[in-house]
Length: 181
Image (tube, rainbow, N blue to C red; front, side, top):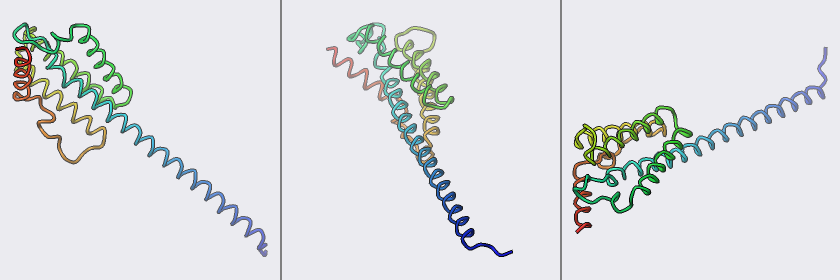
């Protein structure tokens, strides 16, 4: 049975059109997924960075049991409450955007930060030096899981960018003393 050349042409054109449409739709879908991933990553970077910025401020805000003035003594409890509200908002943003392990690390760091804050005030049973080490470890863990969620696998975060070392605290305390006099 002979094949009609016109029918071959129509079937070939139809097949090419279907393949073209499917290819275009697939390309558009892949591009939208890439854009969404890029957008989500940018939001995560911003949220993680804001949370770390707030966490890094915690030690400087702690009242020190009257031994030396702190930012807290100047700003008062109302601003401290607003600061804690900002921290909870940052953690809520992380909970919305980030994977569960980043959210858990953020909550853990917030709790440890409160422990450190209390220790700096002379409250609780944990000495400030121990609370600081726990804080630094928890902060490092948060940075690690955040980097993993962002797909950052190469390189390391410099130790001075992660750690709230003795030198940083000593410098902070020294600046508080000089500003008080």
